[in-house]
Length: 260
Image (cartoon, rainbow, N blue to C red):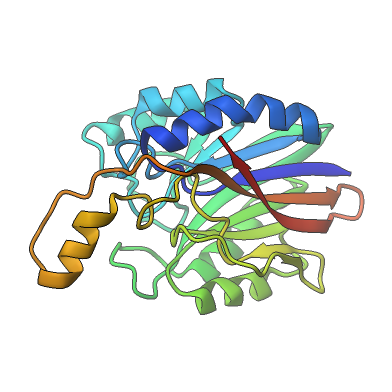
């Protein structure tokens, strides 16, 4: 069996620090073969920088994925192409810089990794995630032994639908974006590991990783405020997936939470 850990949205400095602190121990303790992390909120809660991406990779992350905040940090569009283990969402326009997928290898098994943006309640220009997934799987036929698909989306229905659409074709379909871990981790009938949201890696004494008071204030009066990254109750939240490389089927999918 091979094991994969997918770390949910890393939020700000607290999220980065717990990954750096915990990941080496988790790799050893769990015997992890692949570690993938969404870092789209890792720079002050919005976007990522080259320096942060390299720090996460040096800490033991094998692949960094991104989401709708992919272009939030100034200059990132010039840095992304130079980072071989970072990929942007695959269903962005083809003219966007950066890789639309990655291929990792461990134990002779080639794992393709991609992120797809949902379109329900999302403002970013993106193609259909269902057709995008189909096209990418076809493109990589013979170049990868299995597929890990991250669905970065707001609507749980869209995430569940994509999981069902790819059941039996992807090893795992794991959701991100809403920052709240869901209680639906499972292996679908066709052998695909699924979870609507792997949760947030960052401060849980917060509102989605941000300081509580300004967020409540915004809901009360609608006035703009700076939403600083919170500090308390920092957790690493992830989906742990085990799969049979010969059968190309997942055998286990569960939420993993590590605290400081």
